[in-house]
Length: 64
Image 1 (cartoon, rainbow, N blue to C red):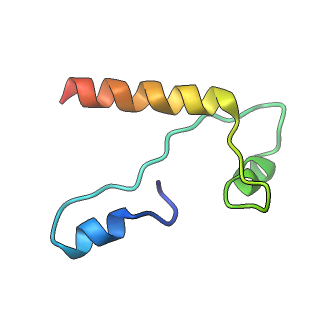
Image 2 (cartoon, rainbow, N blue to C red):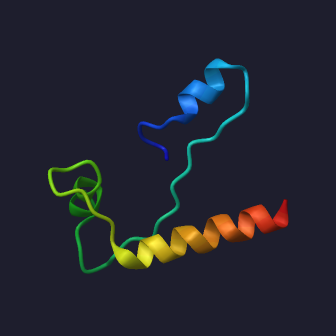
């Protein structure tokens, strides 16, 4: 994730780690509202973004 992530512990040990959280905008929802969904009191994710992220990482891992 590009926010707080466990990858900081990996970096501390000298390994290379990227912070990446691919998502698409929901044009029916303001950007600020989408950002507030993460790490809010009622933390949640827009379901189309969950499947989008899973597909993104699947293709990325398959390519390498």
